Amino acid sequence: MALLNLRVNNIWRELHSAEGTPALDAIRGELGLTSTKEGCREGDCGACAVLVGERVGDIVRYRAVPSCLLALGTLRGKHLLTLEGLAGGTEDGLTPVMRAFLDENASQCGFCTPGFIIALTSWLAEPQVPDLAGALRAIDGNLCRCTGYGAIRRAAARLAERFKNLPLEPMARLRALVEARVLPPSVLEFAAESTDQESSVPQKNPKTPSLQGENAAPAAVVGGGTDYYVRNPEPEEGFSPFLTRMLPEFGQIQYVSDRGGRWLEVGAAVTVRDFFASPAVRHEVPGIERSETMFASTLIRNLATVGGNIVNASPVADITSMLLALGAQLVIVPEAEAGNNNAPLRLCPLEQFFLGYKKLNLGSGEVLKAIRIPALADPSLRQFSFEKASKRRNLDIAAVNTAISFRTEGGRFRDVRISLGGVAPVPMLGTAAIEALEGAACDVMDKKSLAGFARDAAQAAESAISPIGDMRGSADYRRRMVHQLILAHFVRLFEASGIAEELFP
Ligand SMILES: Cc1cc2nc3c(=O)[nH]c(=O)nc-3n(C[C@H](O)[C@H](O)[C@H](O)COP(=O)(O)OP(=O)(O)OC[C@H]3O[C@@H](n4cnc5c(N)ncnc54)[C@H](O)[C@@H]3O)c2cc1C
Ligand code: FES
Ligand code: FES
Image 1 (tube, rainbow, N blue to C red):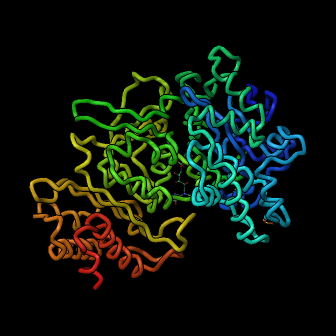
Image 2 (cartoon, protein in one colour; image 1 turned 60 degrees about the horizontal axis):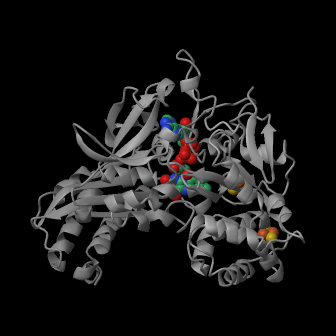
């Protein structure tokens, strides 16, 4: 078996564990770095968070991810930082983030603390002005069962104040953080090493099918692993999946044109975090970034991919719901030719991809390479909204979700698409609700007529569905929530008209 080469804290290491081993097991087992804790092993608690550094174009960036759901193979050629590595860059074994926890008594049994330290260090490394709100978002995937969050909040506030003047240029920021001992010097060493394209560090997963030969059996596919490893927490020894994140061709966001038109193409291995951060995605779908924090936690968004959200085929997958409303098409390729840009493509409208509960229009040996969003000549005309109902505001899977997309042109609703999730075995389009709006006259300042359309669409959607009940909500609850969430789309998109008072006097 090929050895896996990565930088672990301050030295390069060759690991024997298989590519598909959850990184947490190799970190605690083969590497013996036990500051990284195992709590839930389901992505819910953040105790296992580690920092992963990678080169992205001209910069090196560090992000915190849950190592219990991370395929070890995706660390090939990257920099893994654990608490041992952070502490190793200091004289007294305490980085300023650790010191803030100590000074504010933000740790009691200490089991959750490494995860909080990693998540807050990742937040400081992001090129943005640090503030308390940002710090709290960064730790929205970390749970503490004994200290209480007040002390952790005070530690975060202390850090936001101390580091408010960090440079915004990414590499200058890393240098400043190394100088302040928040990050160890190995960060700068890794930045220098990873510019060397001729380095001995392999950039591709040697198990990728393009290198396996044409007759190789298709391997299991793992994107971010945030669904895969929840379902398969203990993969068999030697598990070596096809890792979509190791193929650069699967990680791009770019405009493409074909006979069918112009598209914004999002690689299947683009993470949820990068999807919402992408200037092209924000340009093409104005306002979509408002939906980001409704999806899981920062830790999960740093790892989960857009493609994994679709192929996992959950009826309440959030990105799938958004992409259905946007009229997305899937780009499907043979797994054996995944890394070949001239490989034959199969295009499939997203709504035709789901054939039944977890039954997909995806052949054995096929993989999802990218998702195409139709590009508009003037994207500022696109109206988009996403809503979901879940028991908790953060870190929860929806009971019901819905997205809407349309243009208002010539005073009429055009190209209306409304998705409904959690009301059938598959994510679906709300055809009846769409028909209630398409082509209708739309005066964006007439709150009475807008409220009428909102009620018509909501009623049409509610009447056309037959959801089942489960632990996330009864059938009746789901019908009512679909109704209310469609009204919420209108309130969000036509706020200036005063429609809220009309709908909810
Ligand atoms: C704590 C937690 C919270 C979550 N919260 C949310 C939430 O709020 N909203 C939500 O929608 N989801 C949520 N999820 C589910 C999950 O994070 C998402 O569905 C995510 O987008 C899956 O992406 P992934 O890359 O991690 O998928 P993976 O686990 O890598 O893959 C999922 C499935 O798709 C297959 N697959 C992946 N990529 C490809 C490809 N390119 N071609 C073919 N097959 C492929 C895999 O074989 C696997 O069967 C949550 C998960 C966790 C653990
Ligand atoms: S062990 Fe809980 S998120 Fe990984
Ligand atoms: S300090 Fe004990 S779980 Fe947080």
